[in-house]
Image (cartoon, rainbow, N blue to C red; front, side, top):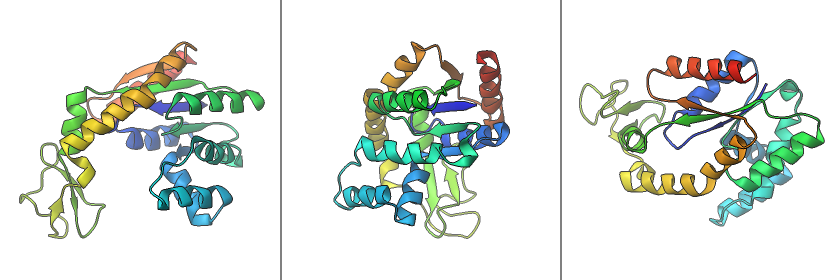
Length: 217
């Protein structure tokens, strides 16, 4: 099964992508992982991406597309994959379609995680991380620490990331609406989109996604 997962920042894409990929026994291919792997391994695409990043410039679509193509051609992706964070704009979506057509395969579905904008802001702006270990994450509303500003696990100071402020989150949402939302309409015209309400418990959202894929297959 070949799936694209889309949704605004804070929709829980990373969590759902991991759970869905595990349930469906297909690799989870995220843009972040692609960049880290290529840069870490010093591949030509990774070195090119790093040169742009080091200069504070956006990595061109063709570099991201090249990384995604290489990953989708790996043996573990022969029977399917779940794309998370790619494609992120119409140019990448059309390049993906061309790549799939060249290899005689097609997408099985596009899962659109739907979350109200105010909830996205609440989720991200309320996040707090431990300075001693970024793996300890709390939330002022949904998972508050026992003592405000103090990590339950190690006693470290909790802080808000600079890009997690409400102002920054709303800016990221504007970018999402402008760049990524158009691919939903693009795929909807192909009859591929299943909109998944992403409020509620994590397992409930996963089950909704699985049921939607069954109905679309």
